[in-house]
Amino acid sequence: MTSFASNDDGAGLAAPQRAALASFHAVIPAGGVGTRLWPLSRAGAPKFLHDLTGSGSTLLRATYDRLEPLAHDRMMVVTGVAHKEAVCGQLPEIPDSELVLESEPKDSAAAIGLAAAILFERDPSIIMGSFAADHVISPDGVFQAAVREAILTAAPGEGSDGKIVTIGIAPTHASTGFGYIRTGDPLAVAGAPHAYAVAEFVEKPDQQTADRYLAEGGYSWNAGMFVAPVSLMLKHLAANEPELHAGLTEIAQAWDTPQRAEVTGRIWPNLPKIAIDYAVAEPAAAAGDVAVIPGEFRWDDVGDFAAIGRLNSAKDTDNVTVLGEGARRVFTEDASGVVVTDTKRVIALIGIDDVVIVDTPDALLVTTTAHAQRVKAAVESLKASGDVDVL
Image (tube, rainbow, N blue to C red; front, top):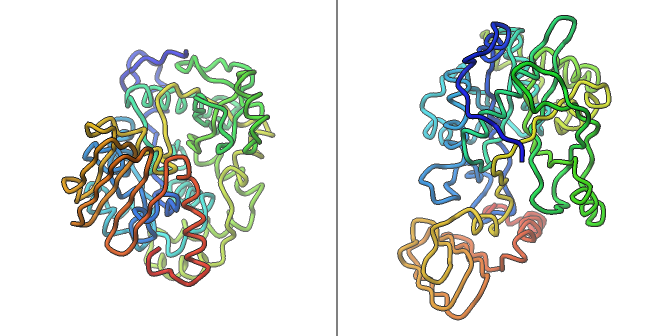
């Protein structure tokens, strides 16, 4: 296993490496609904606003706290207008200048691209790092050491525009739910001994292909963590999505002026929707501009209620994970699974295994951990039938 030291900010590094670390600016895209966690996660209260691990900290707060030792006060959050109050309540440290509000979701290329464009207007030398608000990562020190290596690998040098660096997650099983990164040759980067070139990004595979990836080695999961000079990020966005780049640039140039609202309102609704992987990462990898740092920390994207069961070490005597305001009114006997309750209703589980119960004032979900991924289908059915009041 790759060994990462938990180092401090630039101790023992040469001046260019210390300057690279000092230029780092963290960006937290806080979007998405998390439909597989319905009815707990909804459009008005998505999963990043919840404590899903029993730690006492929401996923958003934990993400901020994990990045703060690296970025200090250089932290930007991109989220929806509807979530402004909740996000500011959880992150009172974030000033208005570091809060980017989307009037409507436009996928990750627009969200991350706008952050890059705004930061570029403020300081073209910034190295940004984008980290989703809804992932669970531990231990923090191993994550932070990997990000420091990513920053040093991303930094432009003499005759180089730098690299777009992703942090690859070591696969724990042959998952078909993630894209994969094929690792290339090692890179000679001062202060980043674990840096490798990216040979290619691979789409989500079928089971047979995922089994082969795991057996062969040299592949990691793509968790969507990117560290890059803002100039290089925008260079590839301009080359591959010129319409999106032009719109984001115009918004960014007006962002710190009185024209922000007018320009954003005119341009944002018409921007194309595309993921950052397709708009930037994959074509940049084909051009030889992407590197990877292997992330040997524990990582989970909390994709369903089965994940909540895995991530919560605190269980009752019957091996049931119980979360929520009404947790004390849950009775179990000879049972296992996950219960999330936000009501005062008494819930009793007797003689049942691997159950998932999510009880909210206006919706009740009952399934099993084995079928937890299928919750998204219920959400799609409710949307199709017009029952959007519970979404």
